[in-house]
Length: 237
Image (tube, rainbow, N blue to C red; front, top):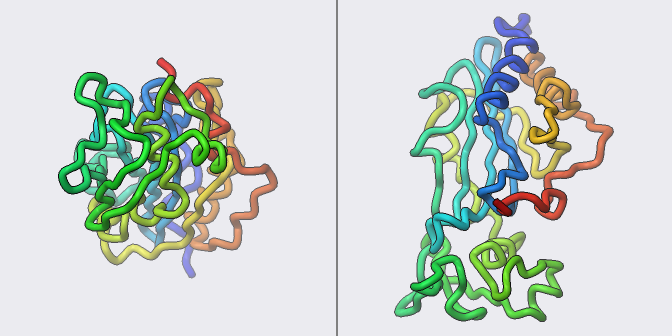
């Protein structure tokens, strides 16, 4: 295969530029309680694209609007500039039949710790009682369960419904660009600690994967840190 018409430096430079503009996922974002992530890398000789999903609960949005999967897009073949646009926020939950999930007065508290919600078109049960949360190693953020505990409790059973499907992922990238790599966890840079993607092993290797169109290059040596428990400052502002 011929050499790519883009460079690793171009990829890392774009990621750094977005990070400096606060358009790269910050897992300890003070306004978002983190829940889960996923990364997708696409490339051919002339084009590259990287999508990072950041699923979390926005306390200030409240209700089901707070359960949001934000898709961050990077690449040289995007339908909008690198980063994220308003249409890249996916919200896939809703109240169950004749049942309000959240309190009216403080709209991030659950009305009941046990209930039903729609997850896309599927009606699912949730259990945010203290015993259930302890069993799942989920700490209660406030004095009673909020949308944060609801979201985290739905993982990993319903992860595939909470994350983007292939049609949603490809809204901003060409339909024919090949998928090279999809990962569920990785070692993420500490942006609040001034670490840029270009200094991070994960994204150095992913840049090499995209440049060479070879997923086997991705061979991390650092343990993943993307689980929400590693980012306790997320959502605490």
